[in-house]
Length: 434
Image 1 (cartoon, rainbow, N blue to C red):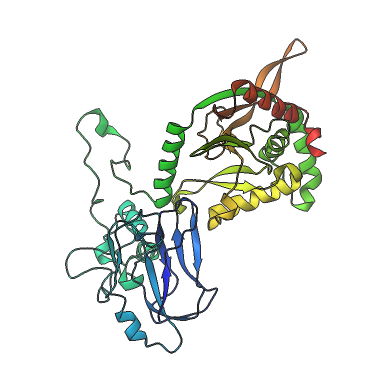
Image 2: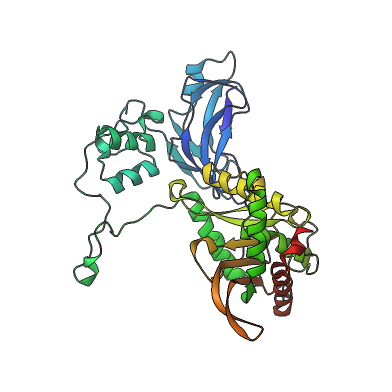
């Protein structure tokens, strides 16, 4: 029997995935542990490994295509099997998903057929006018004015992928189109005097963008949000941070303001357990669940070349580790998220989330709660202002923090008391070193 490789469920909210890139081709031998594809989920792009040995017989789903979880995306011929016979059983490049249960169930969903590019389409085109190219390749070509009909595809079945368009741009092997094909002409009038380079256009959503949008709408419409804001005197913390970074420079350690913030938020949970909690509504059981572990989620913005979006990396047991460990883990999660994506384990189980836009010069903002958390803290930049100390107006560093809370779990007084505790830690930062 041939081995079926299906679209895996790589996160708890994933309903479909996109084959960003195949790392193998038909006829290629693979063994357990080989990275066979890059999969874009609702949260990040992840590597898909093979769990079996054999020869790739068929790749029925082309790069750039999205299919429901459970859909067969590869057939592997096991040892001793006839490669041609296994390939023929793949339905000549088509994968059909049976109708029935919701698309989120493995192997089920609404009827859908994913057809790979014909084997004869060596340059990514059919005999007609359709161009077989990944969404990312189309986007780059559109922005750069590249005529895809003149580009040679190197992806599965001759599909044009990002690399082909970039090579065409640098090597001059593709002619430039006169203008992007899906740009809507601007209306006459003042609107048409926009700076050159801007145009009305529809930008296709990645799986990540689509799911982020859905979850944020769900959070904002089902959770009763409210906000509480406090200002923090950051003079002592900025001074201590500078001293520590000078002492730790030869060890390659550089503490950020956010590292102190993670530590302060985590320690404050022990005095305010309702903030480290979640709302539970399971039929007959409606309750507030206080959580034993303190896992602080840190929001990480992804670069546009990775599709943009926002992921939350989880620092586990943040109340029981020091600033140096928090700094190292924050840096590791951020670098990995931006380079190749976090694993489901690295993005799960947060009990409280911090979103910090201070590095962009933002002084104040509010954030939407990251379910199933009961709160999220939006943090601005520590900026110098005129402040009153001992009856004198002097310059001082001040940072604004705004906590959005689920009113079903956290009352206004609870939020105020929690923020007061966090503020106390930050204004006396030596307490965070203990």
